[in-house]
Length: 115
Image 1: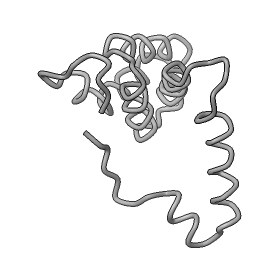
Image 2: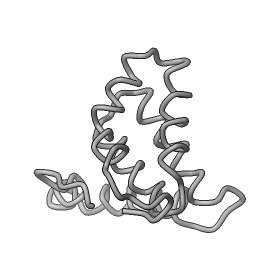
Image 3: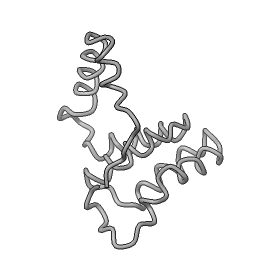
Image 4: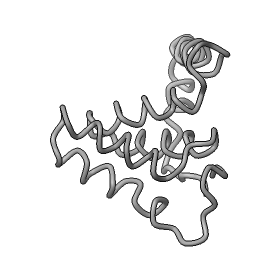
């Protein structure tokens, strides 16, 4: 399942400012996509927790799906969301579940199979 947005924020940015779009893409590649000491699954779970804490539903979905694609289980995703609630409060937990709950509760999803 892919998260459908009404618009692609990077393409909108690119249409106005190619340099900014290129800089954002380069930063994402540098910190998220390159091989490093932190495996991609954990990077996605960290970003999922951060997204939960700042109440960014689109990022919760995006990084939740990223975590699944890179081998995280639904239980690991729920734990990352719950950890974010410690500093951010349980309203952040609730908002994250509202943003990604359909995927967490989808019947027949194989754990760690990705989106």
